[in-house]
Image (cartoon, rainbow, N blue to C red):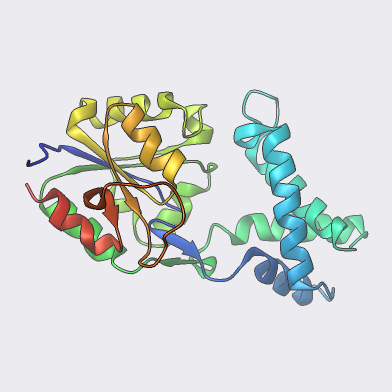
Length: 238
C-alpha cells in the first residue's frame, strides 16, 4: 500500500548526526589542552553516570524546574570532571563553558552515511520536513554548522516543546507545525521506544534506523526498518 505522506519528521542524534568521538575522549582532549590529565575511559564512565542522574533528577534539561539547559549542561560537565578527579573550580568552570560551546560546532559531529543525499531527495520529492529531537537549544546551531538546517521547515527540540519523546505531545506540536494529520506523517529515528513506538502511538507512521546486524531490541516489521538512511526512499516514494 502506498503511504500518502506529506510530512517527514526526523530525530537527529544517531539518526542524521553522530559524535565524531566518544564523549570521554572529547572531554579529555579539551582537558589536555588546558594542561589537565584525565583518563578518557574514566571520564566517559563518569559522564554516563552523571548524565543519567541529572536526567532523572531534572528531566528535559530542567524544563519547568527553574534550570536553563545551559546551566544543566555546565553542571553535568563539571560533575563529570569532579568524579574523574579534577577539583580546581576555576578550571572546571573554564572547561565546562568551552565544552558547552564546542559541542555546537561541526568539529564534534559528523553526518551518518546517506544523510545529506536522503534529505535532499526527500525535499525534491516535495515532502515537508521537520526535526523532533530530545535536545537543547543548541540544536539549530549544530544543524546550521553541519549544513543540514536548510532541509527543515521547523526544528522542534524537547526543550522548546516542554515535552520529551516518547511523550505524544511533542509529536502533536510537530504535526501542527508541519500542517499534517498523523496519518500523513512519518517519523524517522534510531530509538525503538522514543522514536519508532512513540510516533506510532501518536498515530503517525515511523521507520526505525537500525544498522545491519543490529539484532537486539523488539521485533519490528522489516518494512519499517532502515538498515541505512538510503533505504528510506524505497519505503516512501510517492
